[in-house]
Image 1 (cartoon, rainbow, N blue to C red):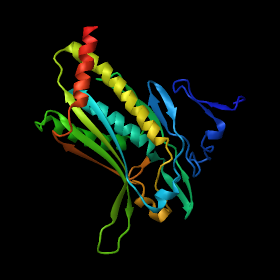
Image 2 (image 1 turned 90 degrees about the horizontal axis):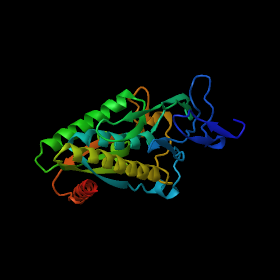
Image 3 (image 1 turned 45 degrees about the horizontal axis):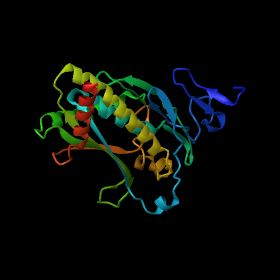
Image 4 (image 1 turned 90 degrees about the vertical axis):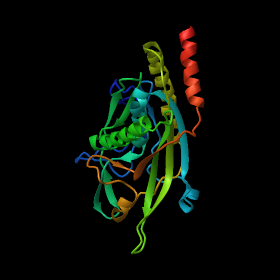
Length: 281
């Protein structure tokens, strides 16, 4: 501590200036209103993101424009689930907070958010996710449905899965609440068919490298000063956050997918070329 740095455990491999740390947790184990940086993994090390709990963009407060980010990956069939979970968990790691604990209207503390590393079985890759079994089960269910639909669609293994963040706007009875999206992530997926185990091993390494690039891209997007919903009062917290989980509080989100043969095959062609070039060495 004498050097002004907070030294995290060696396994994480990151030092944070004390001025950038979140406030010291109170006696009840919770943090005060401001949250600290969110970590994300890059090739076995943690990248730090600037805290973004407060809305930094005045223009976006008056006119909510939905941001759209598109990623494209090419994977083998058995890699679909791990690749999608790596991307979705990374995004939600940066779009989740600890549980809000309100003392009175306008005064609250935020609980801690734990993280854990996940090693992939079919990809040379390790990613970090929020330590929430409920959130993990929800993502695995959605990704499993997408994988099954992709497998049995007969569309040559082409599809996309979207993660949409939104907030609710109360409507008068008898109308239902309006859901206004403010950020959408779309992952386009191309499934390649490989001939032998040697090609599968090369694909395992190449997909790991590509996923690392995608994670870095996600972190760069999260570091931008873009619109985030204003921190709600206690009576409006359900309009901004999913409060149904017991151990974490992500922004309201929904996952959808589409199976189509109109996404193109540029990434698939690139992956096959990479495998052939590697075999030729």
